[in-house]
Length: 217
Image 1 (cartoon, rainbow, N blue to C red):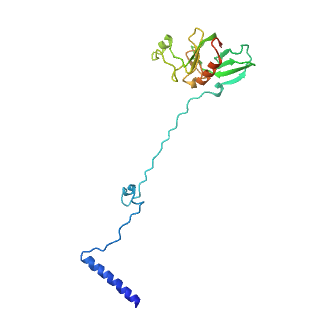
Image 2 (image 1 turned 90 degrees about the vertical axis):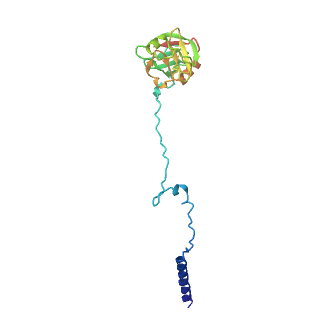
Image 3 (image 1 turned 90 degrees about the horizontal axis):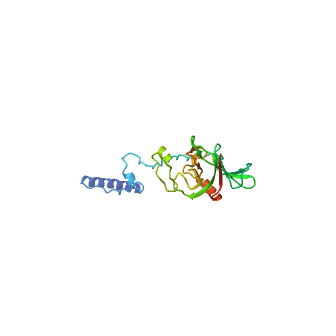
């Protein structure tokens, strides 16, 4: 009996609701609740029926060109010296691209160097007549005649072809100097000067005084 009464009550409720609807009343419905995740701006911009468009930033990594390097044999090292020159003498072997600073005890400090290109080779014995830190470069007239775009002068600095230090040889135009192109060490590319890596010419500069004997072979 109790079950019958419940069923009757449910039917009456449905009929009443239908009557209200027929009289222009709407049956109130529970409010729509949107999940916080679904209310995010990026989702509301998607098209109906489609999946959310996920935009992922792409990081483009471009490989850097490896800087030019020199052979390990041209890095500074101490070697045995069997020559007859006194300690403190600089001996430059242009054929093999090495500069030797003779040390005590039958040894020498060896550095890799760049030398004059074909047509600009030279040999002789001189002394260091002057030294300069971050020297100013003043290309001689002969060089400017060959290369008209060269400046009349360039103050010392990292971009200066003479590099960090210079040792001036006798009354010649030649120098032992640093370089802003260290990858040319071990090559014959200069106009006759002996070029070194900046860190190497700084080391040599600190070891030798004005008056040092220099033999170029």
